[in-house]
Image (tube, rainbow, N blue to C red; front, side, top):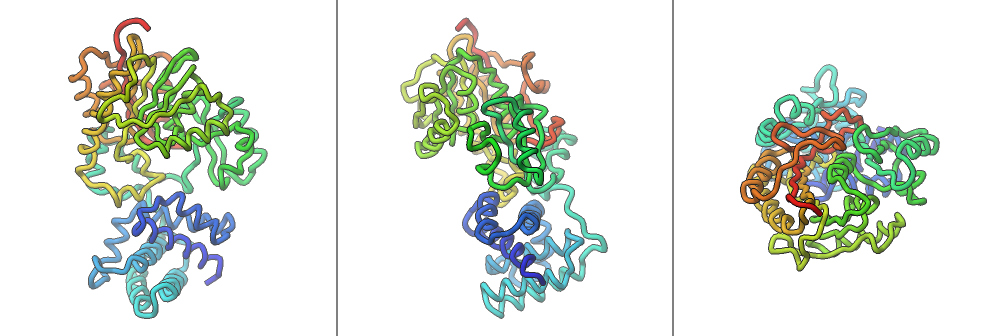
Length: 441
């Protein structure tokens, strides 16, 4: 077994271990471990494929492993991570010799946990290897729990749900926003500077582009010059659905690190970014300075929106609520979510979303819009919340499609963003509803 392959598998195993034991997110953990190990592009690709591939089909891998474990629930976490990485390679990667996979996993476990557990790794993976398909191939869809599949089908329908769960090329693309100049100009600049990477123009977001396989975004051509900002394509479409004009005053509720706030500030007169956690908003201020957006255009406020508006009044032309949610719309970039969510979470988070929307409604001036977005395809968090909120606020008018919209609304009035939208970069799945307060600004 080559040292290169061993390094890639060691990185993948360590990331799977961190995801399971530290609640780490796979993407930043993988980036950090690849950098620490000094992997080249090819080895980083193998580590990425093993990590994301295993997370996307974890229930199937665990079922194959547990059949050969005496006490599956008491398995050492590092051993479990090594078994998952090994099982994924045995069952889904045809170019990897089975003996090499087993040998490498055994060496890793022996190094970290000693000879007794390395013997377990050897015995279990040899039995998994005995059932290896004649022609192993990468999975063609995410192995989601039954409750997730049912939730997606209720909200999206069978066709869209199937399109969303279908696997996509690895690594996931990085969404970018052209913060100055046109998106097509930035695509050309990236293609010239990074010929090894895939680069493309978004079909949905007017300032959107994406890149895959170019490494650290801070090293991209145009980033240092503040021509680019990192923003997922679906998130950019949400910003466009807000319909901001240059004279508008906008409130971005649940702003987090301010990615949408800054995209809005590039279009509006002023933006107030609001979040419960002040430390998140500090990052928005640093990014504002990097992008050269005028300080007067972005104000940040830490407010608990479940109890009120922190003294703000109904003077905003646009109010965006990108509400806390399950995040299941990000499943392809964050497949580890399936380890952390349960069937009751969509309904639990829907209650939080309704409380925040109630505060948000008080901020909208006559003639203004309230925009509700969730990065989740579940019915409870999208249509369910919109219908309940609409009944509680009959004074607000649910808007259907507008001529400027990048996507049409569905019959229920919600705009649904996702990979079925003819977007090469396969955006995260969002649901968006918009209400207008009658009157004139």
